[in-house]
Image 1 (tube, rainbow, N blue to C red):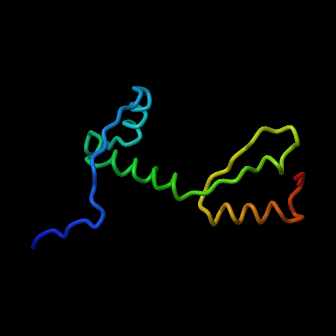
Image 2 (image 1 turned 90 degrees about the horizontal axis):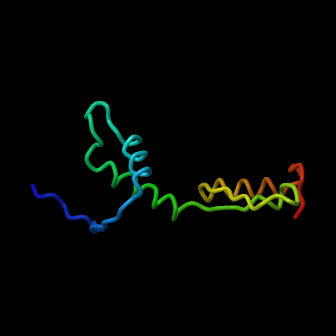
Image 3 (image 1 turned 30 degrees about the horizontal axis):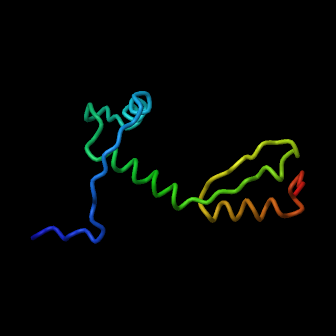
Length: 98
């Protein structure tokens, strides 16, 4: 039986990384069982990080901190960020300065 075709076809992308980043990534993806980085591990890692980047939401929480604080951005799922924003906008929050 033939393998069904992908609806979203993969396309090649070639890039380079600084040596120190590549070394950290190699260590993170390394498999003791295989004695190497498993095939497809770079692709799975990068695709999940890219999806995370595009799907996550962010919220600057510095208005709820001390007035002189620098911007502080929190990232997470849209549902988590909405819950955090709702909590910060309630009277339960300790120092609401906006």
